[in-house]
Length: 313
Image (cartoon, rainbow, N blue to C red; front, side, top):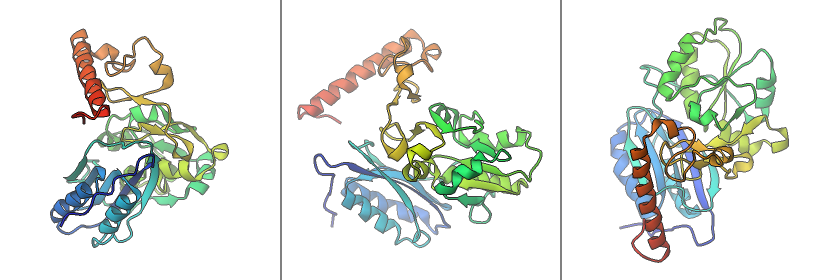
């Protein structure tokens, strides 16, 4: 029997739930079909990744639908204590639902790194400012360069990585010879730091810390007047980025290169909606841009048909 759809009511905000949990999931392949069916029946959209090491993802839907999916997940052995972080969106931030099987729920590509065996020390958001304000603390942003570009903590090191797979190599070459110095690491929701701190512990770093719940939990709990966060936090959905109080920020997404664009970059003559931005203009040919213009026109036409009650997205 199918579950009745419980989509968000008109004029009601969409609930967005970000979650991850490391656990030794037995037979994770068998978890995929019922989870995917439940999400589809409840009109929940987003992406969930399942692997032998756990679950990771972000989903969006009505209050009742999200509660139902979370309840389903917490009935799975190993996921009973699954935590999640919530925010809201004015409209559905995902187009479809995907439940995928992966080798890792966050891809570092280093064998035998297991956060369930050894991991850094969690630091609550309320205690984070004191840690990173200590001049002896090395503060590292474990996210990718395009994420760091629109916001980070004051004084944090940007490893300038393009993917998380590059992070172990950066650590090896960073020249941090004193492995007793405190190292404070952070990422969007906490999952990359689970593996990053486990990796650094395996490499002999003694005092490794990470922000519990990630930037999202910090922005949710720490008042803006007390915050050491600067800019916006990139999120992997149509909201693009959020700021203090998890409010949607002013960044938009370049449909050509998929990078976030600040309001300043949107004012550049190199920015064209759906076609180019200052970050990708020089890497594209005029033929590329004309192809992107055609795609943009088609997308706008589909939206107009959908708004008029036709066959849209």
